[in-house]
Amino acid sequence: MTGATGRVALVTGASRGIGAATARLLAARGMRVVVNYVRSGTAAEEVVTGIEAAGGHALAVQADVREAAAVERVIEQVQAAWGGIDVLVHNALTPFVIKPFRDMTWEELGGKLDQEMRAAFAVTKAVLPAMTERGWGRIIFLGTGLSRRPREGMIALGTSKAALAQFARYLAQELGPRGITVNIVEPGPVEDTRTLAHALDEAHKQRQVAATPLGRLAHPDDVAQAVAFYASEENAFMTGTTAAVNGGMAMY
Image 1 (cartoon, one colour):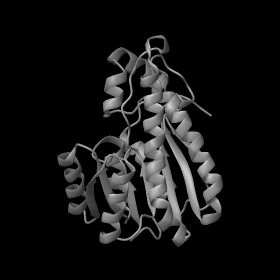
Image 2 (tube, helix red, strand yellow):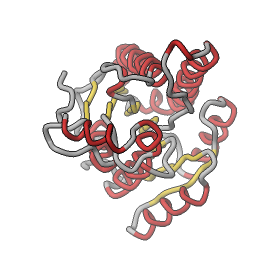
Image 3 (cartoon, one colour):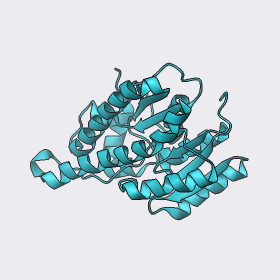
């Protein structure tokens, strides 16, 4: 990754799954990585230890990214250690219910929408000053194919991630003149994530595999590769775009 050495990347929700895979890959490509977590401190420290053992630089930082004050404390901590953040990978997943709309309360749907956008708003606001000052930045939001292709019971997640995707496009339009790109990575079902285990039983999982031309579900490393491209110097002219990492399950 040309020019990546010394760049500072904040990966939210990076203690496991896609976030951990992304943190490891960005570190392997020369970035200094902030491994954010909420409760999984031990897992986050294991990610940091693995990165450092491979010769990289990483820092585990606890914060609930739904809270603006907590995010600001992260920025201050990173600023003191490494300076401003160049790359934001917003991967943290706020809780959601799986149920049909007819059984859902407004608190369940509206609460998910609020938390999704509150977190995205807080982390984006926090990283923009340094990116704007430098005239360079990379922002990547993790979405979901469910924002385009509805599936039973997933209205809260799909609706909130659709809002996040449109938020990203508006940011891309506004921030482009400042040298900041904003893109979205939309995985299909991903192996080894709590979301998949929570949402799909084995029979449903096998139906998803059968519907995927590449014959398997995504792994966290597959998603991390797409994120890493968007985070790189090589991504000089793509903004407001969406990478669908789903093995061909959906094509758009």
